[in-house]
Length: 99
Image 1 (spheres, one colour):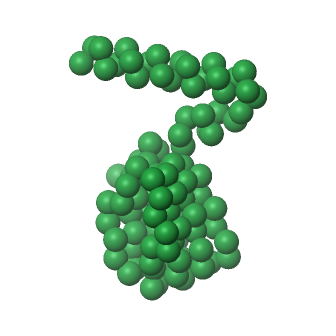
Image 2 (cartoon, rainbow, N blue to C red):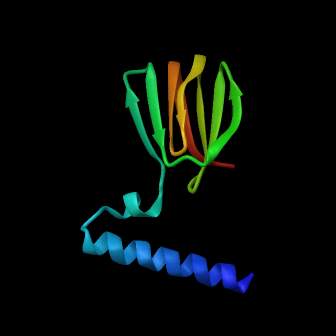
């Protein structure tokens, strides 16, 4: 287990050094989720870790910041890529990091 922790720490340090050298924002280098809402009809979530729950009125995604809960009506997954999901429908609420 210690070996995994050391490797993870080295990866965090490398990301931090590269981010500073390239003058990139810390949130981009940390893998934090990026949510882009277009009106109330389309939400793009980047840097997700997968779908935890899918229903027409609620979608829960996993991320490094915790759960991302999206609530609304007639929600649908418009596209799913390894690090990006587009959600359509009538988006009524978003909650990040709730347990």
